[in-house]
Image 1 (tube, rainbow, N blue to C red):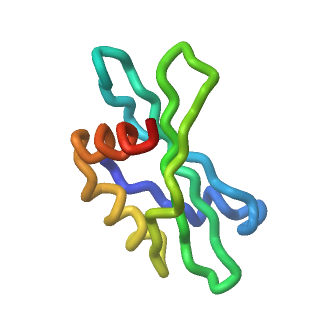
Image 2: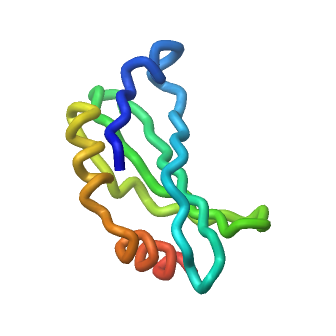
Length: 95
């Protein structure tokens, strides 16, 4: 997964959540959209959670803020370390 920089995305207001689409995965034979929702907390630490949405559905499920990093590179390292089976397991845990 290519690293993205958050600096340009957050130039408008650092308190607003940033929504980033990640590559979809297949779950039970159907595409599952994955979005990373990031925010910068009061201590200037990046915090993030995942949002899953099956294709064709308006329903989505979100994890808690399972990502954390003092720098955007730290947070992206955590996201890049996840593989497709990790995303499936996280989604399955929310069902």
